[in-house]
Amino acid sequence: MTELKIDLLSFTERFADGSREFILFKKTNFIFGKNGTGKTTIANAIGSQCSVNFNVCVFKDFNGVVEDNERLNTVALGTENAEI
Image (cartoon, rainbow, N blue to C red; front, side):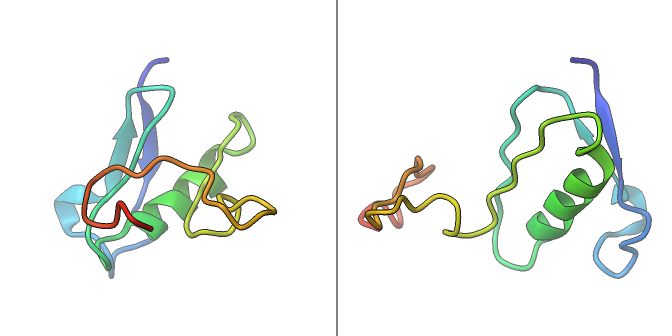
C-alpha cells in the first residue's frame, strides 16, 4: 500500500494549521491517544473519505467489540486498564 492522505481541513477547530493532513502508510493502523485529542474525528474522516474504496472498520467504543456473552472480544494495548 502506498501512502493514503486523509484531509482534515474541514476540522479547523480541532487541528492546528500544520496538522490538517493525516497520512496512513500501512494496511492496518491503530490510532490512540488521550481523550479529546481528535481520535474520533480522524476515524470519522477516514470512514467518510475511504469507505468507498477500502474496507474501513472503526471501533470507537465497546459496541462491536463485545460479544453476545458480554465478553470483550479485543486486545488491550497497555496495562492501565488490563483488568477491564
